[in-house]
Length: 557
Image (cartoon, rainbow, N blue to C red; front, top):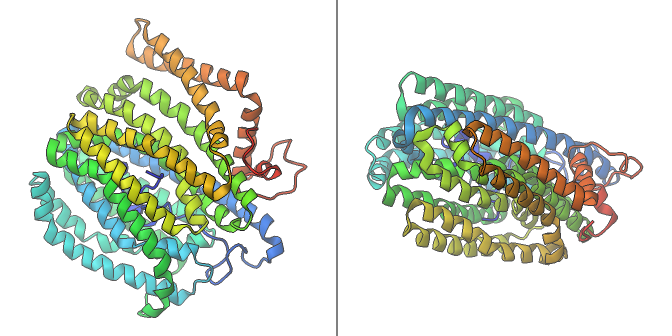
């Protein structure tokens, strides 16, 4: 619930499974602390402390562009693939894929054990240390493959889906292939070579989507998932290994001991997040059946779109930004406020529109067979907006080295979220979606308090950073509601309502939040390495937002 996407099954219905080793739980890929494998945190290759700011800003901006492009392309391919498979297979057959993904997501989480984050976060990493980590990943992959083979009948019986057993047993052979990509991804990320990571992710997503759709059109049914996962993992691992040129595996396991303290804390956090965030899938699949699971899983993808596309991109940059500026609380505060503003304005209006237009969107995209998912989409879209805004919190805690705080929060989040899901289960699949969303809002005051404690930014200032996005979304929602009263064709209803929503949302920002709107533009330009006319005379500074350095980051602009 912190914005952590630890192995959430519904977010990838197989397509992203090949990338999870580098992204499960923390958005670890793309979060380098700066420097080379043997360099010092905060110093770019060949640079000195005095040259860090300028070099870092350029590297970070390029990293943001590649991260955003990679996430956009990967999500685009995976969403198209999921939609095509859903329309071809229908809720019942697609439910087999959703059930399989619950287990595959767990396997991806166990593969990493937090080691990728430790490699990125640690200041000094040798090739021997990286090679030993790769060996550890492969050994764990072999054990997981064997465990998957023997556990497949039990998992199949648990979900009461016979076809699930052979699918999982075949996918067991792909687990070592997935493990090959973990360490190369981490090493490329810490060296700021995000364009190589992005290229691998894009190519892998394209290959996996093509294989999955092709198999479905050929009549493979739920087995389309196998083709998709294997193609994704094969292309991703091959490209990352080629780009990183190793490191060569070795048995110098003593070299990885210094990584365990950080990696185990991340792993514990990710495990807590996995079980709290997947209990809804597990319970829905077990109690309500795979058809209900497919409806719920497809609706949950709506929640994940802004979290992965917007939140993950910003988070990849903010983790190193917070880590490098940890000794400057004013800069940390400025970066937090800037990130919150960008996340809010990018996600809240978008997801509010999705919540309003869910029936029309589901009918248009998935077809009438999936209409029971519309109400779930509406509820989870609102939850997705909230989750995207607070996706920055784990990056803040990890960047400042607050691993114990992360664990304590995840325990609290797990208790609250499980309670909401269990209560909601009494009211069917819609109750589960509502319980999940409500649990997130219950935890919001805790997240606000954590951010205040770590940065000094007051809760009031944080809420004011979010307010313009909420205000504009409410204007757009009111306009869409009025438009819904008109008796027009469903397509005109959808696209006419979208136009009205956009016009009113922008009007609200322009009329009531004009000064902050200009700030959004400057912050977004700074994040992508561009400068506005107001920024050209400023000396480059913050990795995230030059403009934010003028204050302590807690003014309301």
